[in-house]
Image (cartoon, rainbow, N blue to C red; front, side, top):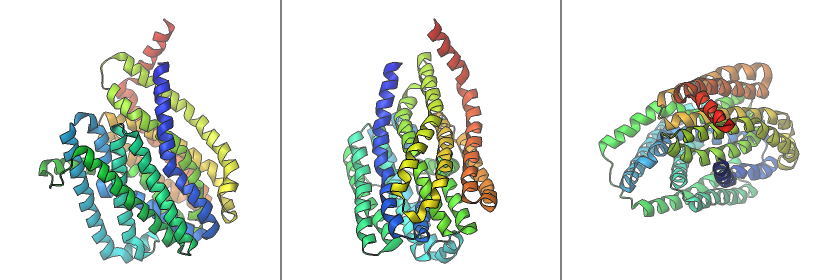
Length: 426
């Protein structure tokens, strides 16, 4: 058991460091942007990031999660066919969304409080991101750590370099968007080139059957895909409409410190999920006991990790954030608590993911989205930005309980735990 913990901790540290490359990019950007842009301008950039994240599931119907579910069931030819089908699906979806943006850009811009001339840039960036994360997922499950970290470096450093050059030339928030897109274009081309070499891809049109299965999976799974991205977008739209773009900028700064904690959580999930998918399906009882021990350790350590990140953020925030954003410091504890709650929720989703329990995943995710929208609206009205963050905590915790009930029943978690405990007392 100790050897298992060492292995998972080592892998978790690697993926945390790899993911921190991309996650630290917003902090370096914040050092630059909060000293050059006004809160309203920074609020536009924050809204752009949320809109792109929200569109990602709609562009590829979260097919990277289907890749995780079936990766170890497919041979090389099957993986190649899957990758090509996913490429055509995301391209077709992006073209449809781009046409909608072209025809109804003014109406959409008014609804989301975003400049109409940049609506198509949101769609294009979302398309680039889904391809970037799809390639990352492949390299994660294929065990190609060098490529995983190289892609993270390329995307973050190239984007930051171009953004810095444009912003110093006075390009404003528009320069930030152009710089991010430029970094994504280069990284996607590199990742696809590596993928094509590994799988010897042939970009012939996929078979209708596989394409249809992908679309069917994606539509049923869509609420789950929207779970992580719909919540922050909902929060930011509510804040923008009820409180203003400046407050949205303050929310975005506080959310950076919650995102730093999520890097550590995501590092554990990146290390744990491939191992979980291999082991939990096997019949030997010791694997179930191992899973229970690792899972409970994570759940117990997560609040302590949240406290640690809060203490670090109190020291780092005055150094990272410009003085005009100082009022965001009081929101940081709320953002970190929300990330802890989100960690519980996505830990549970990993179990459901393995079981291919798409409907329970979608139900719990949809519950989270709707609860957050309802509670955030009233939270913003009566308590401002802090009320929105508190609503997010409640939504994720309630949804984690819903998914946890299914897990406990299906996997007999407590029975497995008691068996593990009894084994240690013998």
